[in-house]
Length: 62
Image (cartoon, rainbow, N blue to C red; front, side):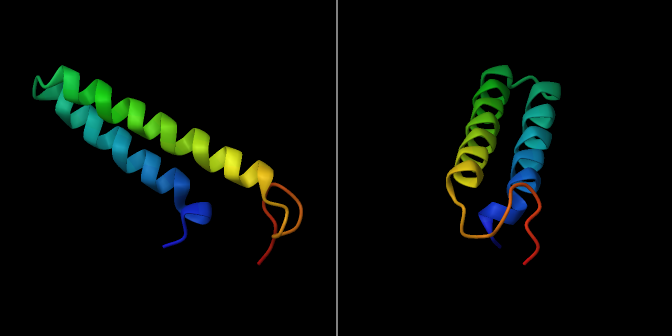
């Protein structure tokens, strides 16, 4: 699994976990997982902007 291509799936899974944690009452855990998902997404976008090896951004065909 390539982080560069699947960062939205990783962030989506983390947000889904955060929602479940929030619903069951573990609010501090939900906030922590949400922050982790935001960090994952921001780091993915920084990596995409800084790496020019795959062609034009976004959606360079591989």
